[in-house]
Length: 410
DNA sequence: CCTCCACAGGAAGCGCAGGAGT
DNA sequence: ACTCCTGCGCTTCCTGTGGAGG
Image (cartoon, rainbow, N blue to C red):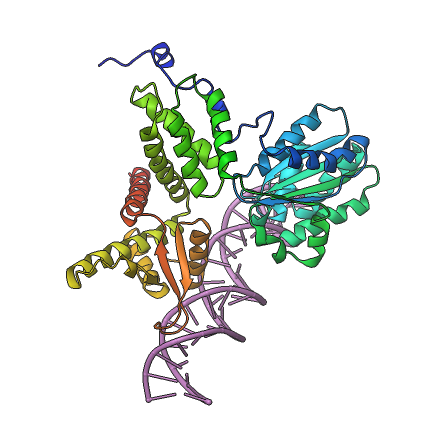
């Protein structure tokens, strides 16, 4: 079969009208069911347009409840106004320390500055002089703010900076999806960050359904999506507590699947297989971007789970999947073996525990403190995704790495 | 009850990379 | 070219912690 021309590819039939609408980065002009919240954010930030310092703000709510979207929406509205307000959006998952956040602010403020490798004090000075000389009202948006390691230091630095500024100011908007997170904050930063706080409630199932309908209407060509498919998508998302982002992914994937199969309609079938695809996509993405040793730990866990599965089936024959709990110690031993196999120097047990915590944070494993029946205090580990899939993904990753190494050596 | 086991997780410190100042 | 800093990943050491076993 001859390869197709680009125009042939571009003219392939598709169910999408505007795929962008379904992207998680898309900021719609109007967010349904968030009018109250948006108004409140606008009121909160309005002083910046009158050349006054807006108060800090703290927003929290579960993932996919429109927090980031609402803030971005307000910021873009604010850009239409002429003012000295400047905003800087920072995702703290990537910029997860005081140093990196300030470095990022500098980069936004002074794009041609190559700020790599400066000391913290230097970066801070650069930021301050720029804000003050431009008499700017800086609004720093810290998304996923709970990811910052030295958050107390960061908040202290940024709030205290205002004491040194006269014509200008810094305002912080913190966004977090951990509701309990507020309690973990130091007293000082709590009172400064929570000058103005808001909660985004999860979308209710009927709201979810409206959102999906609305997006589907603009994202897809008319009459593509079955009504029952929308219901199903809403039901799947609803059971996983009102996460709109997940719903959009689901729609996107369902559309792609329909295109691939040359189907002109999106039905329950597409939505159902989209759900599976999205699930393994999420896992694959999370796993393959993991640092080497965390992958090795995960591989060790997967190995042991598979081994145990075989043994219980051979010996007892009882279908006790419940026994897939692993204890921390045996996992570490297996991890050492695996590391040797891939010729990676193994990390210490202390650091291995830190890896476990990271893996748990990502939802790839779950751990429980040992209770009665167990000797001593340890952690019981269970894998979050099917062990065989995890094993495949990681082994594939490492075989790629190995072959790259061989190329280098050759 | 005490001791020991099998860990958890904090604290300190080390070597390294890479930029600034000289 | 050199020394000084700073952040980062990591190791070493250490102090809990909670059930098992004597």
